[in-house]
Image (tube, rainbow, N blue to C red; front, side):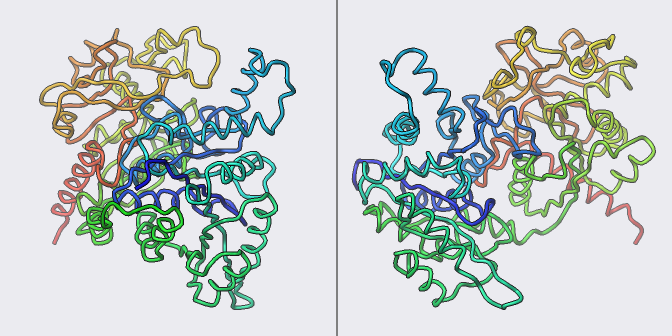
Length: 545
C-alpha cells in the first residue's frame, strides 16, 4: 500500500439533505472494516465561524469534540460510525477560512498583495483539506462539501477540489457526487434529468465526478444506471444507488452490496490490507432489528419540532436499546406544553423521562414540573446539562424549601442561585466559543449509580455550558438526599447529582450523548434504559390478569 494519503471528496446536487454525511460515514466504515485508517471532515459554506451561536432550529444540534470544537452535527455521525474521535480540524466553515485569511492580511503576511478568492481563499481551504492527511495517521481522508453544487456559497470549495485533483493526481483523489433520482408518480417513472443537470453544473466548474450516488425511493435498474453513466462520463458500475433505509445504520451494508468500496479501492489503486470485517456491525443491526421488548421514553425539550436538535440523544437511545435488545420508542414533549394540571396525562404512561439540554428561559418551568413528577413518582429520570440544573432547582424548591431557588441564567434577582455563572465566565461578553467546552475529567463516588454504570472511578466527558452547580449549597443537598456523586478534580465543580432512594434519578452537567457510538453505547444511556425496562416490567406485573 502506498505511504501517501488518499483523498475523497463528497459533493451533493439537486437537493439538500440527501445524506452526504451518511454516505461519507458509510464509505469510511467500509474502508475501516478493510483495515484502512480513515477520517472524515466537513466543510460548511456558511459564514458563521462555527455552529456554536446558531439556533438549533436553524442548524440542528451543535456537536462538541474532545478538544472543545463546536461543530456540525455530521461529525456526530462520523464518530458514531467509525468509533474514532474527531477534532477542530474535522469541521471548517467559510467564516473560519475568511477569518484566517483576513488575520494574515492584517499581519502583513501577503506583503501588500491584493487578497483574492483565488489563490488566497482557495489556498487556505486547500491547506485545511490536507492538514489531517499530513499527520501520517490516516490512509484515507474523506472531505464532505456542505451545501449543493450550484450554490454561490460553495463555489470556493468546489474550485479548491478542482485544483486539488491536479495537485494530487487521479490515483490519489476521487470525487463522489450524491444526487437525487426522483420518482414522478403521474408519469410512473424515475427521472434522471436532475442528476444529469447537477453533474453538468459540476463539470462546468471543472470537476468530473468519479462516482455518482443516486438517492431514490425505487430500484434504479440496469437501464437507469447505464443512462446516468452515459450522460455523466462514467462506467455503469460507478453509478451507485442509495435507496431509502429504515435506519441509517443499514446504509454501510447497502453500500457494500452496491460495491461502492470496491470501486473506490480500484480507482485509488489501494491495496486491500485485509478482508472486510463487519461482524460487530452486523450483530448490532440484528439486535436493532429484532428487539425482544420495548419501552417508551419521553424527551422533554424546547426544540422538539426539529428532531435534529437532539440528534445525538436520539442516536444514543438507538445504541443503548440495541445493546439491551430493546426497542426505545421516543415521545417528543415540548416543555412549554407541560403544567401542573396536565403533567400526569403527559408522563404517566412513560417508562422514563429525559430532560434535554438547551439555553434560555423559555419552557424552563415545564421542565421543572416534569422533574418533580419523575422524582415523586419513582419514574426513571435522566437530566443532561440544563436537565441536571432543572433537577437541582426543583429539589431546592420542593425538598430544601428554598422556594425562590433558580439559576442566575434565568433570574439574577433570585435569593437562592443554586445554579450560578462560573467565575471565569463573569466578565465574558462574546458568546461564540467562550463556554466551558470539550472533555474534562470527573471523579465518581463509590456506590453511586454512575460508578456502577461506568465500572471505573475516573471518566472524561464533553461539556458545553456556562452555568454550574453553586457549591455554597453543596452540604444542604447532600444532607437532604440529593448526592453529588461526580466532581471535576481540578476545580471541584459538580458534574453528577443523584437521588439515593430513587430507582434511577441521575443528572449530569456534561453531554454523554456525544460519546455514544454503535460499538460503544454510552453506559449512562444503557443504565437509564435498563431502569426504564425494569419500570415497564413492574407496571406490567401490576396489571390485572
